[in-house]
Amino acid sequence: MFNPLKIQEMLSQAGQMQEEMQRKLAESVVEASSGGGAVTATLNGKKELLKLRIDPSAVIALSGGQTDVEMLQDLIVGAVNEAGRKADEVIKSSMQGMLGGLKIPGIS
Image (tube, rainbow, N blue to C red):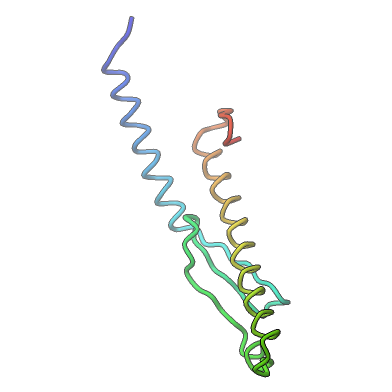
């Protein structure tokens, strides 16, 4: 028989799991670099950029030419995108751990 109290309990548990997941993602930190370490991006598991480090030698190497600026911009984009991919892995791993092996399309 249908028990509305059980559904309410399940929804409450799901809400608690979601809050726990958000907390874990905010605490998770990933880092990726490009250009042999010239640019390093640090993101949390929520894919928020926490820090961007540009090696001083990469800036010194700029001679004012447009090509050099474009290269640095590409390195920044590459580092941020790679860190984003790592954050995706953290998110996927966290979700799989919380769901205890449940096979949900689009997540597993």
